[in-house]
Length: 142
Image 1 (cartoon, rainbow, N blue to C red):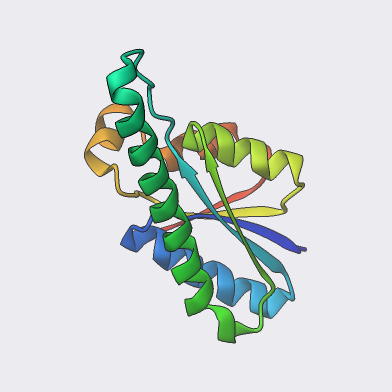
Image 2 (image 1 turned 135 degrees about the vertical axis):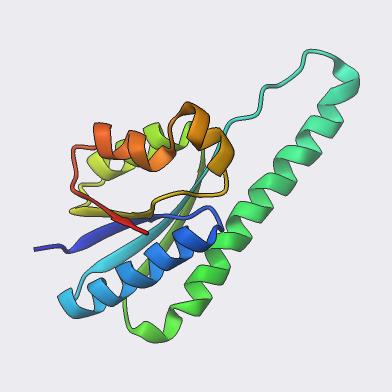
């Protein structure tokens, strides 16, 4: 039924709960899991004085995303589930939907709200956008 499960993570408690649920499900179904972190793109500024600062911020955000996934991968290493991790830059909902379609995932498992709860309340959460636009089944964990 489900052999490839995509789990978007942002470091929030709800995303971590979704990852735990996905790992349990994957263990029962002999499925593989990809832990996926999408970093919202930064707007570069044209001022050359800011380019060094921009690159430093970019690198730190990238490292934080990689650390988030590495911690999750380490936490689930004993589960026996085949785990993969991937960090990408872009619009989170769009990239999650694109990844699920292009790599032919059978299921997306994600938290109901992530780190951007206030922004999500105003603009619509990433999980809501993924549910509406994904061509793959989506399981939302509360």
